[in-house]
Amino acid sequence: MLDPQHNSFVMYDEEFQRISAVIEKLLRESNSKVIFLVDKNGQLIASCGETEHLDTTSLASLTAGNIAATGGLAKLIGEKEFSILFHEGEKDNIHISIIAQRVILVVIFDHRSSLGLVRLRVKKASDELAKIFEDLAVKAAEMEKTGNADSPFAEITDDDIDNLFS
Amino acid sequence: MSFINYASREINCKIVYYGPGLCGKTTNLQLVYQKTAPDAKGKMISLATETERTLFFDFLPLALGEIRGFKTRFHLYTVPGQVFYDASRKLILKGVDGVVFVADSQEERLDANIESMENLKDNLEEQGYELEKLPFIIQYNKQDLPNCTPLEELRELLNPNGVPDFTACAQTGEGVFETLKAVAKLILLELKKGGTG
Ligand SMILES: Nc1nc2c(ncn2[C@@H]2O[C@H](COP(=O)(O)OP(=O)(O)O)[C@@H](O)[C@H]2O)c(=O)[nH]1
Ligand SMILES: [Mg+2]
Image (tube, rainbow over all chains, first blue to last red; front, side):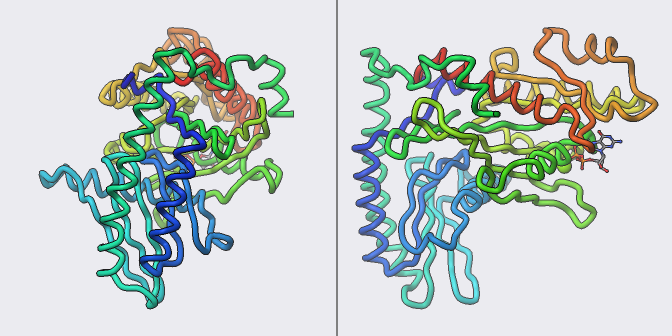
């Protein structure tokens, strides 16, 4: 199952709802502006808060690049990874942490919050999120075993694919 | 590794453009960006040096349309070609679903192409991937220049397994979309085969 080449990362409705609930609670309790979750490969998983004026796709890709680069740095000096990154701006700050070694949690906040508060709340939310991603992995493995994992693409035709480019 | 999201009914796939320095990877993405309708593309991001050499990566998200009710998104990345950026190249290959190798067809770049192809294989292997099992396309770029290695010879050296390949002039756009379509198609066919596993 862990053959990296033949595995998709799958998100189901139920887990998506649970994840959304956790990050929305985190947004409120930490007084932050925006929260998003990104796969280590740069795919946006979920987001909440003031996202209307944000290019979340680009943010996701650059966040993953950032984590990958600092992860490379960590290895060079003999660390496993840096599990928390913090960037301080004039108005907005970014707090980045890694959950269950695979998902990146990004919290953007301003003067209405503080690093201490964000840290505290992130810690709690991380445990909850880690549990959900664990459940998700179990579910995906089960789906695969029982043959319920038929991809929505099992039935696609050459025409479907050609139409994408027309 | 593709990301299938049943909640938002989206599928995301990652395509990496690989090849030696200055072969035209960034130009490929720029052209796709220019020729794609505004509603189908996101911002193109280039992390480049002051002299416009790719430093870390270029990134271009495309939303092509729907298949079976799923929004199909492709994330295009390029790697920096210079030999000394190998660490960055490895990072960008993580989670890749399909690779385009852009070759510089000029005679004096033949060795650089071969070296880059070897480097691609090594870097994939390091992460447990096999190039032979990945959706893989080769593009022979800069065909407009006079000093190109004959196509047959390029094929023999760079494409012994006979994967789909295209000649191109990325500057004018010739071959650019053919290449992209071909790799996207291979990725979708792979998904069709693989289920989620
Ligand atoms: N003549 C010619 N020049 C090209 C072509 N494609 C790219 N170039 C030029 O080659 C140089 C390097 O291209 P770039 O895309 O930055 O290479 P990269 O290092 O692979 O990203 C630029 O000056 C491009 O304009 C082509 O098909 N023909
Ligand atoms: Mg470049």
